[in-house]
Image (cartoon, rainbow, N blue to C red; front, top):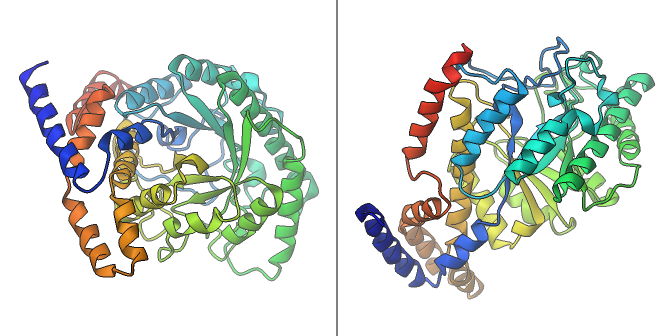
Length: 423
């Protein structure tokens, strides 16, 4: 053990004692954190491009800004980038894939004809790395999505194409879960909506509910695949109406027994995603949680240790919901190093979870129950100054990942040695 390590160990013991004085067991908190698996999103690495080459723009209300060099151009490059990111994030995590990231050996394969074999290399890579996979049908960047409608489309033929796409994606998700021994969350998000106020809000939602019932009709083993549905407030081109709103999907999830996805960028800026967690989990057994950062709108900025991020983590911990929430990241920033974006966002949410796990929640709850709101507020402010950073560095060191700013040195070296060659 070198002198710097000895010094860090002594500082950590001091931090442990500081937290113990508040009734917090640091070792227990770190043990809980080590069990949290966050699903990184593949689309941060290539600006939601995928490898399908349909010739269509992203569409679906999605927009990626920036032109930072080094974007992944092939599945192998994307996997290389992910390998670097995973090495710099403490813990064992997952990868979230979109259907448009299929590998078809250069052959054109329609989305309603995709098979598990088209994701065989992803499954092999995940198995080698000991991680799980999650999956998403891709209801955008396609000629049959150009109108802005897919599962709620008025044309029965187009609607059937997207139903069949959803069906095959569930089978792919089940194959991933079975192969890797961990259930794959297969999440349905569609862009369907209207730029201006529609006269008929009812019919698209009736068509959507019926289409989803068809997508989910085939019984599949829940140990292999978990179905989820994701709502949204609005998008580019669907500013006035979204068929799959939060309210629509909340009702659908309750009545159909699927997971509800709460995306922290998909609500009005004055709404709190954290507040919704305990509300919906009164009626649902499990949720999918997409952590993002909206700036004025659903802009999918890289997650940081913001008040909203911390509030989400606090609600998960205070409500004992960590085992009832599947957590993933969802953002895409092409203005900065894309590998760094993964690392910044994932480490930020893990820090938020650690802070929540180190909160003296029992003591604060006792004050609240006794009506002593003065002590509750005073102590909430005081615990903000406890040595969280010391515990975080200790966790990173025990997990074998770089401390503090040192992880960025590794990203910069990878950028010089690899990413710059992609110009």
